[in-house]
Length: 394
Image (cartoon, rainbow, N blue to C red):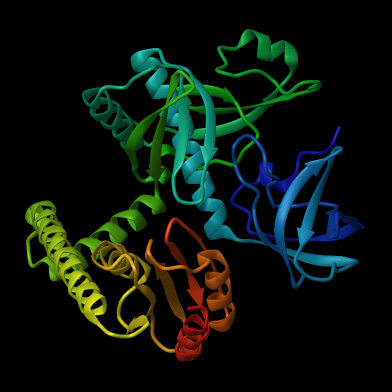
């Protein structure tokens, strides 16, 4: 059996000196095995620690075949090395993980709901509960109960027990890992919870600082409950406050009026968009009428500030007004843009062949159906050449 590693014995230890036992490679990733480590390997819903072995950054830590592999971003060192922990990341994980233990214990005591899964995310963490629905007032009561236990500053301790002792204790567990032998690690929140766990935790519920329930979503017949704790909660509040300040400046409204102010702005935007669509339709109709009455064999038009849907509107209206006309319509600034070749029912021209040639001249690609061939172009400055080619087909 492996000796108890330093991250378990002393979870607040942030650096140590140790020896490199072995250097290896796994799928083009280099790793080292150390005689001792303060870096926690991923497991039990808790992500791996990060840090440094010598000057090499540790990107991941995994426990494989009873050895802890530290995967490095740089060349692996050898001999005696200094191992350092990314403490801010570790303490955040300790707060979130201990918060999960407390949340799980309180929700089970108050409502009888069992936790079936736990995920410690980069921004938000969650647990999955075996209940189909949680009422809003239940969330409020649950959050207040958790706050009371945080204020109580209950000690959080870890210890190992024998399988025989384990069987005699009121342990909350989802079961031991398959094939587990030897001692069993328990984490206890005094007077609240006794649970099997291999992760790292704070020393007191007071160090969780605070825990906020963020909401729920249905999950495989159960409910996923999202939360943040500790420093994450303060950062989340700061981000919301900064965002609200920017919105107040944009909308010109107080916090309690932001939602109504934003909705009013969205309504104005929708009205403006409807007005723009109406104006574009009128512009397209006027452009089509002008082309329908023109004397050119091949009608053409270009709009630098329009797009393909506008060209399609012009083409449809032109086909209605002048079924014998052929028109090449383009839109875009510089060389990049869109084109539409519109061929009326009375025009004796092979649309597919003509469209492919126009696309070639404009250095683009496209396709068509009915009486319209459309596509993208990368050489709109050659529009005149395309019109000249179309003239030769008549």
